[in-house]
Length: 637
Image (cartoon, rainbow, N blue to C red; front, side, top):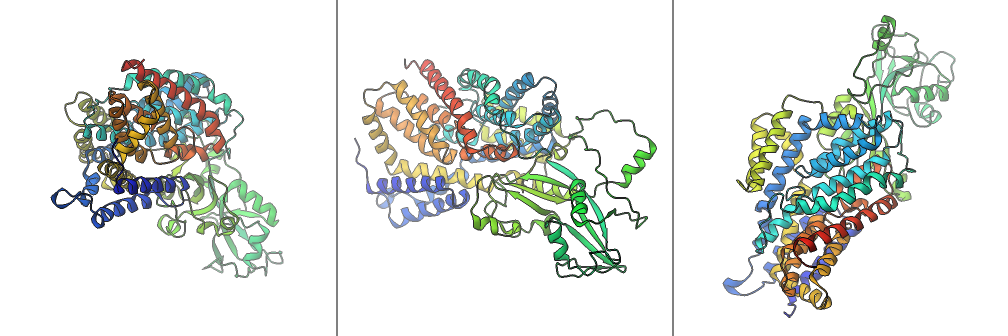
């Protein structure tokens, strides 16, 4: 057995420190990855491995930025963005969602199968992003909890993602590293039958049992967004408001007032808390109809609609009929009398109050609303923030706009509809209302056809997936499906750094002999066990690891480890590589296991325990099924 060198020992300690940092989750993943990319070359430059011309070149650890796997990952992210922006899958998704209130059982099965199928060729995140608002709206129409649907849908997407080499970035990294180690090559669908066979009992569990386990979980709010209206508060002579400072009025209303402007004698006055109200002042407020009624009651004052043509019309805001969640929800317009139509036109909402889930790639992660200048950039205001985890007392005491935001948090924002859509388009977060879903566009068929051609070229081995996907991304640009702004939005710096750092870390472990030494230790510890048992244990180890650290980092380390372990045992390496690939996709146990877990967590009000309760049986089902299929396919019984 090879001895562990000093460089190998340092790399093992360094890797352990990196994994510990991922688990603690105090630093942004991008920062940790940047530190890896800085530390490895500097370390090998200061303490060379080898001598003379045979010394390891420190610059080799930057090779990940030009790796075909990273090119393929970035190109596929752009293709996925094209599918989302053009709404290519939206018609099918809306039909599945609208079917929920008619035949909920069959609809859930269709959603699970459809989501899994789509995620086999499209990145998991766009699929979940598309389905969340539609399923929330469908559950609201059916008067059921979306909690019974969202987590099973998310898990079906994760299962579908592991079925092809392009399903996730993790798969691409494993396949690319294995090819570099002389294992493979794997075709696009080479292990799809194994996943399909193991997925059948998994999908049956998600369809029949998982919703029952989640039946008691209720979403955090019934309404995901409400129209906001402008209203005027008139300061009448001899009323209690006369002579009061705005700060006193804010306190009386429970600090819920959103003061847009203060009109005094034909001129505008900045509505500062220290301003004293005078008779004849008009304070313009903006909020939902229900909140305006509550404010009216708390202040014991009458609110008036803002009417530019007939100022002073005393018509208190009435709660408008709730608009349909999507165009598909109310396809036939209802009959209205002329007076009702006229009344509705006078009550057009000026803005909306909506919930927005912070995605892992959002620029807000680790920062605050104020530091990112969200109000100045988009003209939207933060009126509430619900963290995905319980926060400290110091965090609770901070000003709302100064609180640090984490991935999975939900922001309650208020602003014009176009401004909120712009914030979503720029990646600030995902809006949980199907009214904000991307409309169908005339480029949808072009985007879908491009994706089909890319998949066909890769499946027939006419072109490597990196070339086919890059050509597809170029086609979407030239075809007008995407703008360069859409492309830059699709390309996540976090993902790029994570892939490059993971490849560098795996290469460093390989070149120092740390992987070979660790594989030898494992082979010695597992001596006497058959290859089938070792493959099963390797998959379980990677599955547990990937629920606490980055999937890509686990894959970059696990792939060379699996190959070295197979060679130490004198076994075929391919099933060991697939064990790593499958294990790194079994991220069902924790919210931080995969970014889509965080998206559905707050959207449906899940807790950490829900992932353990529902995810543990699924983990065991898929682990056993995939292990058995590998043992059967490679004759390891």
